[in-house]
Image 1 (cartoon, rainbow, N blue to C red):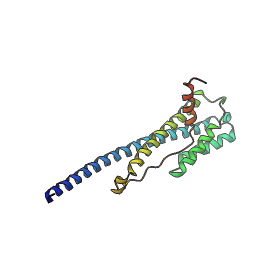
Image 2: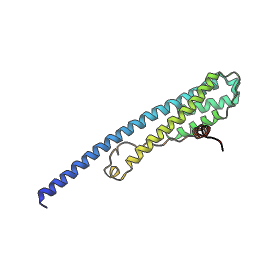
Image 3: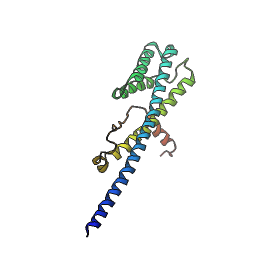
Image 4: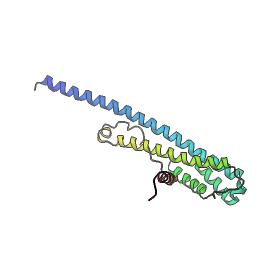
Length: 182
């Protein structure tokens, strides 16, 4: 092969690598935007749940019980104020306080209970969407070539958000409801 053919082959390989890099960077940017949107949705639902819990503790302390209302208000305050790694612990504490509430709370409007239940479901779904986006982003960023070329290396790797949200029980009971019993 002549030097001109080698030069043409090398130039072709460089063009292919540049095109692939541009495509991968675009994909990484889209995945990061997906992670950001999913986090916004999850954070909105978490803040909403903390607000509803604080309202329940403040406006219906008699129905909830004074001691439980104090714990619920403190858990809601910690969930709203926590950042980064401690957020999951605070959200789990708030979730446990809400799950420990009795099903029948006299004096608590049914709309507030329904809003809390709906928010819990939306949190589970938002967490699932967020973790799916994090998984997809991490999978692409940790592949050999993007890692070697340090594509998107200036951005921090997104973290999974794992809390006890009861979504497994919800989805397994819904899936089981459609199946015939043996």
